[in-house]
Length: 259
Ligand code: HH2
Image (cartoon, rainbow, N blue to C red; front, side, top):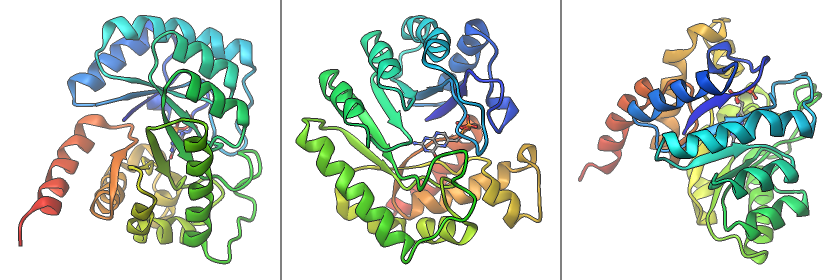
């Protein structure tokens, strides 16, 4: 899953596009490099990011969905927490709804069901403005797993069939929480849904590499992604499609190798 952000403040500047034309060029490149899905976001979720109102989010996303539907032949995913935005984009041909709030809003669940969308339900403790202030868990793996199990139940009950689960790396988690979730990712397989993981260039990788800035975190991202895939991730949300695709090919071959 390649990431495309129609924002001015997403944490990785290279992921940002200024307008539809730039987005189309970038999406086509991602697909040529092997992306199976393009994820479109118009509101950054970085801690402290400025909120984007619904009209602005729609103005950014709708024309892009309409263009990309014709320009690329991979499914488009919409990264939004707003039901109205989700509804409009799915109505115009996007097929995947990626909700970092994990479908806690019943209207988001209804929108996904009505459009027969594939969904990504992610765990987040708190909300982006404050989520990194002092995240706490008794047992992060058990709590995130229980949260996702509840979300999957609610989605299934509403008739949503295709559900991916995401532990939400960096969303209300310390370094130790992120590492525990990645180390024990395999435990999420019992929920019976494909696991999606987004580690690409995130700040915990900066911490682990002695403070490397976001532009310098490619190798760290590939290493974390490789561990994720080895531990059960089936979809990786990445900024660097070509490099990720090559790295995953190797991990996948090892993972599938006979005894
Ligand atoms: N991470 C980000 C945004 N959306 N969605 C899912 N399902 N999983 C993630 O890990 C995830 C996500 C943050 O990355 P990015 O979109 O590049 O940054 P920003 O929120 O600053 O636009």
